[in-house]
Length: 71
Image (cartoon, rainbow, N blue to C red; front, side, top):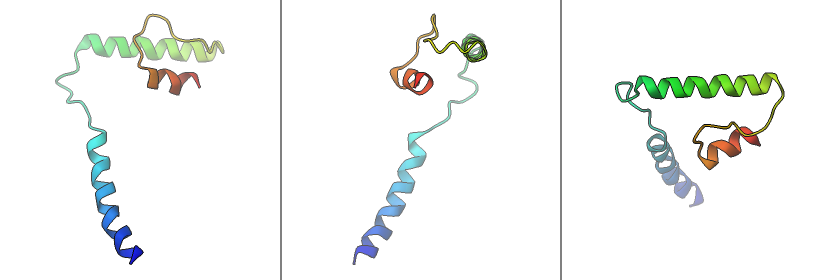
């Protein structure tokens, strides 16, 4: 009986995963956003090379992203 419930739950869980992460269409991303992302990555790589683990200054980061990079 438990196996039947598990078999019914698996498709529901797999189906919900696709809607959680959707990609942004490339025509929406402006050159300004690309430049900001490029600057952020350059700053992050420079900080890693210098072993400076402080918070990147001058960027508007979400708390989730901050915790992922600074943990």
